[in-house]
Image 1 (cartoon, rainbow, N blue to C red):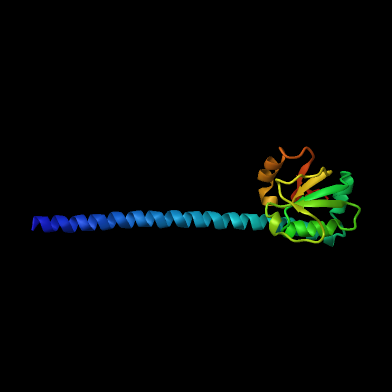
Image 2 (image 1 turned 60 degrees about the horizontal axis):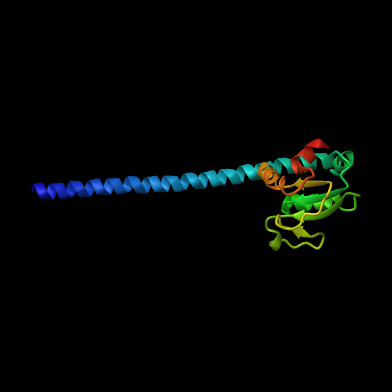
Length: 163
């Protein structure tokens, strides 16, 4: 009888321990997912804030071109060819500010007739300024690029709030 009770207690204890371990594993996975989703939300909020400021400028009849003219930036490279990058290229088109090339970590999968898209490992010809449109990751990108180029690297966020 004692042996059977010990077996049952051992089985229950093992089951409880297994449940605790499984619960901890699920909790860890859920925390990671929540952290990832929160990061995406923060990234998209930052993009929306930049778009909102940019739209406000447009509604006031202003253009980002004036920022580049004020700083005498005549040649530009655009880092990041997603939504903000595409809009910036269009904003500067036919303005006297030349977008010489784009830079994107996913360069092989970006197709545009308008300009050449380079990878960070490519030769990056000198321009007056590189504008990083991946605003949420600006600090990381700037740190990575400061060893590659010796000309200004600015965030699109600085441009839209600087007009």
